[in-house]
Image 1 (tube, one colour):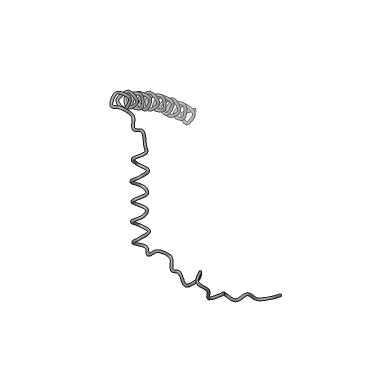
Image 2 (cartoon, rainbow, N blue to C red):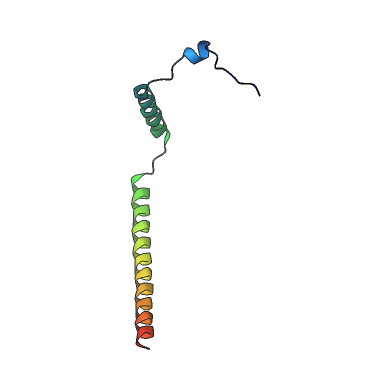
Length: 80
């Protein structure tokens, strides 16, 4: 079994960028990607918001009804 030693060539002499430089690059890249996004117009945003609120209301009422049904069923079973 052979052992390897790290070479001390130019590749290992290079240091990775500092954390601050990496963070700056991350923000630059994020800003550039955000510019590429196609944002929905105001009407589309409004319509989708209405759909989400309506769906959340309907599902909340449905789950509340199922919960109330289970509570009554549980109370009936306990009284039995």
